[in-house]
Image 1 (cartoon, one colour):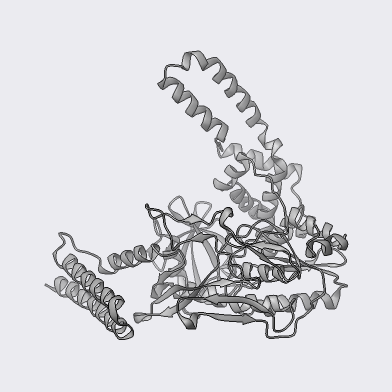
Image 2 (cartoon, rainbow, N blue to C red):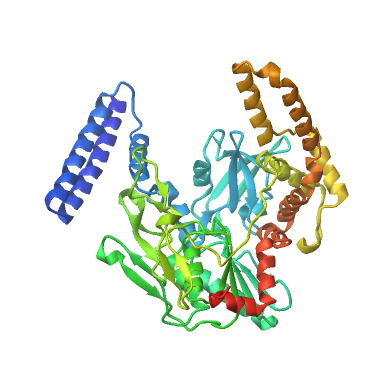
Length: 555
């Protein structure tokens, strides 16, 4: 009886929430639209009540409701999401760059939860957690089979509270007691001079103070060096707060310049965002680096710089996210992150690449084709286009990595070897002077042999499909000698892959090993070596006539 009573109470609570939601909506609208809302809410509440009361098995009310909400929102766009009370810390991190927790990144590997990074100076780091450690239990609760979101929820919480973690490293288990702190991740993991005259700033987020952090970094470099050029690296930066994008653009653009327009269905969602402060420098030659993972606020900054012909954009076309989200509080300390508008950069173009409003019959979405993109003009008259992110002024092609390199990453071979190296070597030289020696590379090859590492190339997969097809169609006897020869050739080439792809494998090994000692900053420093985008920027700065020609539309 008690179980039935509790179940009915849960049902009553859910239905009360729905009634309140209906009442609030009913008060805000009228006419046909309001009738449709009323009608569908009534159908849904009736269906949900009958389902919970009459279904053959006991239903987890919260899980069923969450699934229904998630499926409903998924039909709109991937950025409109429901945020439960347990996920509030994730939202706080996205907006402020800080949260309550232990300062560790985790990743699910083989149904176990593994630490991939312990942020320097925070509780996980202080307690000695290392990349590769397996989290077995938190406060006595097993983590096996749990999702990354669930584990993050366990790790996060009020600063000052304590959690007990059972970890496993190299087959040995140990308990760690950690006190949660306010974890704040800087927007800038690294800034430095690349040569005597070029300042480099790597920006990875747009949380609060991002604009101030970029300004402070550039000011510091200018006070200590003869800065004549600036590289702002937005590669891999998925965006964040819109007003911080305006603040960063304001560092290089005059006060009063429009940076972005937002246009929504409701009048109060339509607004103009212009620079409010005096700029830091409106003359210094500027390059912005972008790639396919540069999105949202990154695209606002990049688009404004390009539209005002203020700097040259180098890299690859950006992601194409031109939608604005607001976080709306709901009942029971939950929230809704909802898309409320689309943004348009100074030339008037939008950069949204996917049209979520119009779907194919199967519900899938499509990218706006190049043929439907409209032309706009920068301040100086250069042609720019909407509907697909920001196209760079200088596109830099990157060679695709080999199948061996991809397999080494996917199977954690590079990650695991870096952990072993770290445990066997107390220190290394500075990131700029640390390189993979022949001895280290030989050790890595021996490590692969000891772990029976193997991988399959696309050529092998295609050849196996050809073999299967030939057998089905009774052609195999005729083509068997040719297939055997191809297998021999592929095997021979694969045996040389550790030599063929040594350069790119060494670079990944170097990044992973350096990050164990110098963390995020060290990884960034190492990736700058032989970086084609950076090299192209430095080449451009060495020929300012070419730089000016691009901005004038003559190149």
